[in-house]
Image (tube, rainbow, N blue to C red):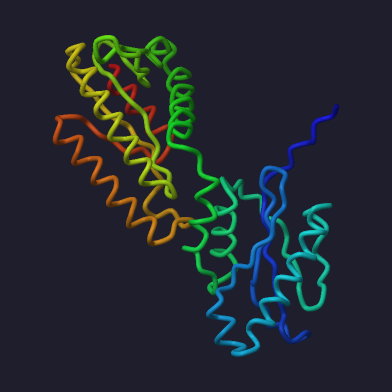
Length: 277
């Protein structure tokens, strides 16, 4: 039994020239290859088509959707061979931007090629693609551990240590625990922010109990979060991110805990080394 070769994730814009040979074209959609699966998506807003074509907008949407399905058939054979225009539609060159999800690919495509797309509409699509908080935090913790141990091999034994927080309870694993500090790592995904906040609250409680039991100097939560000027985030996501990070910080302060955000794994690793020394 053979295993299919993993192809790089990418996207390509789909353009439409309503009146052929005029050179005026609209970015109406995108074809995305993610995890070896090809999908097509209309990104132009419905209200734009309504304004342009009035009562004929419904027929226009059918035309665009039909063309997109034709593009999908060709793209399933090869994303790199769909540049030939068909009936006023054409596909741009694939962009290998390493998207984290289909929604991420669509958002980048819209930012690059279209001012007529509703970026906020991609959030719902991305919701199902976003990893669960536990899984996302585990990945982030693993990456931080790799960077720290590469710089400081002597700190390797302090990662993923466990402690029992209540009598008869199950051991709780912490991201990092030394004789000076106990640390947890988390990740605030721009899509699943509500669950990320709940996860952060639970980790703050675990840190508080561990500090109390072990009489440690420092207990801190280090949360990976995107930059506030990240161009792939919508205004709605950025506003929610600010509110949620402030909420976590307030809860940490209320319990005399330390809270830090890190926009990169290297920044988080710097904090770990700082607390370890």
